Length: 436
Image (tube, rainbow, N blue to C red; front, side, top):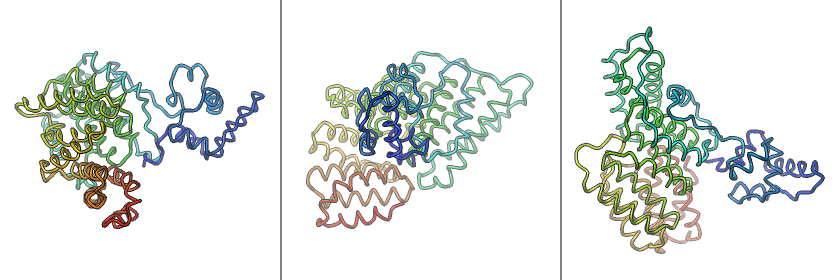
């Protein structure tokens, strides 16, 4: 899984098949070539890969090792100057089909790091908010796209994207095939601007769903590529709500990876062009969570209030990508925000209430929410209840094959380990040891 490599330094190292010891040796050698000495050890490299920022001298030596110019190091903050980050294709340059094709053909790289720098994602969000699309038509001389076939593709895609998460081992390959077919039609077919908009919107919806599949299995590089492609396709289709939703998914990924500041920037741009109240509510909830992680209580509460107002005033049919958003989601995420802001008792009450409100069919969301509730229970010293809730979350996550949810429980288990004498904790740790 991408989760095995959480830092770009580890990714840059693995690209060269170097161990941490090998990299430490390379850094010391780079210092000797300058007539200097460096005390870099494997332990120091390990600290860098855990989030410690190297000092300026160490970054110069690392730049020498990886062949990166010092001007680039000075212009780009650590760790984003390291090898391994890809450039995002700019919107409005006729690159939509190229980006979609690249995502559709991408094999899951189990060693890949998240390959888009946060600043690049912010730039993509700004472009989306500022640029208007130009609807495309298929070139003359190509085979005319059959509208009945487009109708069927749209119907099949709606059905596939709304099937229960437990069926993903079967729906995943079908979604991949549908996206490839749609990209083929866009690239090789002849169609009117109206049909082109339909095909681009369909490509965006398929890419968005596939991205969530990859994200739930912690294939973060693949997920970000599919979301990137979906932003391009939604923009080309002129579907601002869908584009805002996909951008907010990229923001959510940043939140999940512990990067709330770029998430706020992305979500601000996404909110600038949302039209549907339900969509705005979801994006505001995600923005509130990012503010809470940053300790920005006033901005968090404001976003939550706006989210509640948007949800309460929503009328008509919500877009498919956010039709599930409801009171349960708002209440649980409010609880998560309160927890991040240190209000643990109110947080526990909110999360518990939200789970009671959650529809029975939403098992993946329930797995995530049970993990939240387990963490909240542990904060209140209720280790036995926390272990019970964590096992429920783990059971659902394993049923769906969602390793992202399993990882949530693994993180919680390290905090539960000192409570082995409490009922249920040993059983949870055993279940985790056998989890794939």
